[in-house]
Image (cartoon, rainbow, N blue to C red; front, side, top):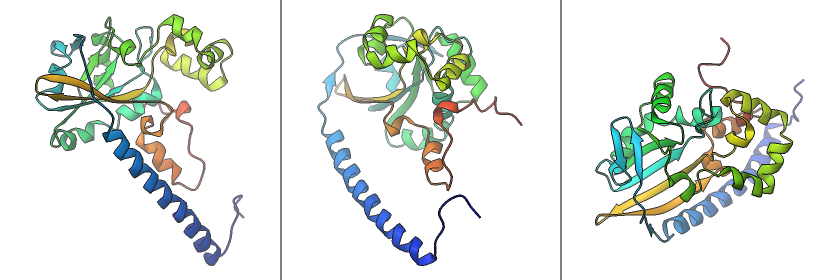
Length: 245
């Protein structure tokens, strides 16, 4: 007998109908939130940033690659990470290459960013087989200005972060080993999405969302939510070339 509760087809249909009502309610709420997201005010970017790319130096406007919208995912890969990017962020990155054609044809340029130097990003991108542009924010104010990274002092001022550093759970200790950085350095990076628009020669910041928002989780995490058993914890993910055969 299975460990999970069992029932008749009629019982399943009744329970599923109740759940469908809640899911439809959530769908309506999500649509309301989407409209409010589009209604957020745009903020002009006044600082000149210079990024390192695979093709040399680039400004924020250059990163649009001729399109009017820029969507960037910040991967947790700081200068102190000696073993590579966060496995959870890496698993999300694995899913992005296939979206490039579709987004580009909708006037959207997709990139990823990290604070590690560009040579390390290029090597990691090749290792993972990624196709999207990977941009280094190393030695720029950009990740700090937009909440994608914290200074060491800031990590000590946020009680939740300080607690994780001072008394880390087992999963976080394992993660620290995976990225090859002490937690006081590793937790300075933040996974998140940031969006910009370009109009009449001006670049505007339009949206940012950070973990633990579900949008910052890899898509396969949503697939696991629909499977009959409890899905694997994202914090216990491995890089795709590190899983045992």
